[in-house]
Image (cartoon, rainbow, N blue to C red; front, side, top):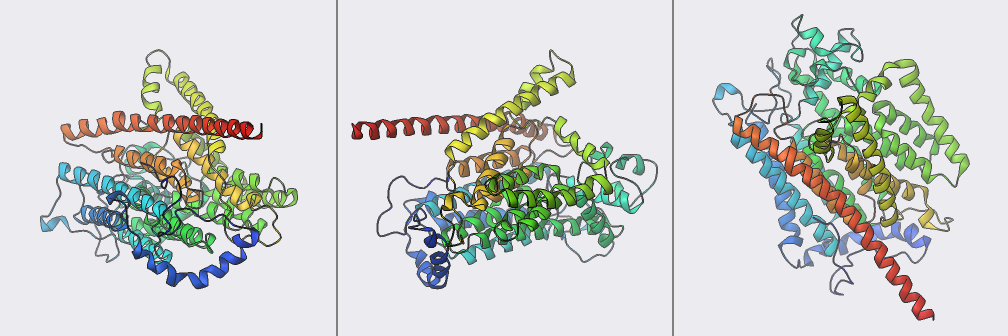
Amino acid sequence: MSGDGPEGDPPSSRPAAVDPAPASVNAVGTVGRRATRSEPRRWRRSRLYEPSGWHSHPGIGLGLVIGSTAGIVGVSFLGPSAVTLSLGPRYGSLLPPWYIPSTWGVTLGDWPAVLITYLCIALGAIGMWVLMKALGAGWRPVPKHLLRLGIGLQVAVTLVTPLTSADVMMYAAYGRLQVLGRNPYEITVGEIFRTQFDTVLRWTERPWQDTPSVYGPVVSASQVLANRLGGTSMHDVVFWLQVLCVVPMIVIGILAYRMADGNPMLQSRAALFTLVNPAMLWAVTAQAHNEALAVMFAFAAIAAMRRRPWLAGLLIGIAGGAKVNMVLFGIAILWGYRREPRKLAVVAATAAVPLVICYGLWEPSALVSAARNTTYVNAGAWAGPVFGLLTQFLILNAAKVIINAIGLILWVVVAWMLFRVLEIRPLPGLADHVVDPMKDPTSIAIRTAVVLYASWLITTPNSFSWYDLMAWTPLALASVSRLDGLMLWRTTWLSAAFVTGRAIPYDYGLTTFGARVRDTACVIAQMLVLVAIVWWYVRSRREAARIRLGVGAGAG
């Protein structure tokens, strides 16, 4: 799947397929801002766009995305199943998540639940691919309409029970431990509920019941907040955790939309990639993962770079206090400021404040606990079969060291390749005194964040679909490239890989089928992403060499 538009110039009867190159810095900034006041009427004529086929028809794409979301909501609304979590009694609560009670006799069997979920994931991915193709081929929607649609879809999946991943119940359990006066970094959930009854802890699922928290103090604080609001009901605690996921997701979408102000096409891309995107709807919002909270702070830091470097530093420090893997956003911000040492120093100094408070004063053990994530190997990643082969000849720890070393080398190589092929897109709103828009720190930070996170996610031995929010968020404001389609391909397969990933008993045939999707099909899909990036790099170098030879021959 590729998000690239058609090669060559579009027909004159259609809107331009790519952003027009700014004639000057003023065209990017001042003129772009004036355009937003006079553009809406002209942009409403997007319905004049004539797709070249179903694969670029926005109506089909939107229908598939909305239908996919409706299917996800429907599966969850039918109540606990092989894919829908069981949150225990509602104790008369009228709060979401809403579902049909089991006493009504309406249940969804394992096979139907799983197959419908696979279908929804696939249809959503196809719909997103069609919308990406349509946008590249000349479709020009009203950006605000896409934004509102995305917000509606995000809210819809929050009103029903989370699916496939039981992580949200572990978030609830870690918060519950803190409410009980225990330290989730030093004691496990299993140590408590095996010795005493607790109305929240008893509903947690394996395999993480015997694992201390690996999250930063800021995320831990959000887990306590959800427990304070939800009381002793797992159902209500999970709802507040869903709120703490969907609100950051909406904030991320609005921030991206506002950063694209002055460029309606880029605003449409921002809304599509952050809020409408079914890959993120499924992987993050429908499963209520806390990546949204951490990424919100990190992305807000990039948004603050132009006007308030001190605020950018403070926000990236808070993001690091939520999850340590937000450090790559921090590196992207510092790289953007590398030509402005004073601002760079301000960012570094202000970022240190929340980090010292979180990991030095508040919860020193959190940093050590978070390091455990570096030792895991995901069965759906490229490393799965390689790690399995190594364990046939080496002890477990030695195999982990080798597989992580290979991953680190691959990360450096893939990042280097992406830096060479991914262009910088100057964001709208540049000040008039900026001489070279290609040296705008915010634009540089966006492209750097895309490269660092995409290359890390693609090469790390331990990666899940919800991690991809870290790449999709800056990608929403980056230049159009093959990486758009590759990320969609990658996220979709990882989402499918863990539809049967819960540690619950499944039908034997379903267990085998899910394992083949995860351990075979998904692994091959991840390896193909690596091959595609290498091929993309090789082709771009050949093309660059061909151009140089042509210029040299012309000069001769």
